Image 1 (cartoon, helix red, strand yellow):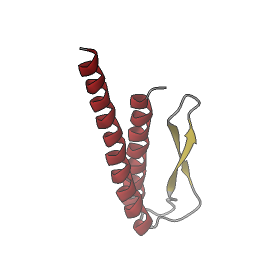
Image 2 (image 1 turned 90 degrees about the vertical axis):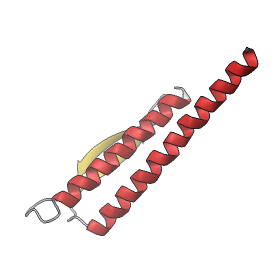
Image 3 (image 1 turned 60 degrees about the vertical axis):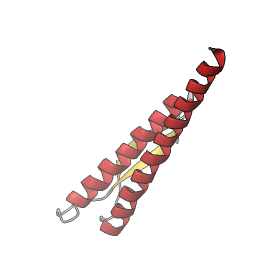
Length: 97
């Protein structure tokens, strides 16, 4: 798997984190709702695969806000990887020209 695909899987994982945090916050006061959690596993070719599972825990809005912040940082980090790869590809093309 190439760097772009690995970074793209990281972006998808960050999106799953953000959606899960939003769902948990939106349903924090819903009777009987249990927090959902994102489980990551390494993909065989590189990158990450995510699954959302229901827990037995009540929602902690503090934890969900932290999860949303972490998702934002993960978005930024994976975008930086894509930017650096683009720059490297451009440099390689300049060298070959």
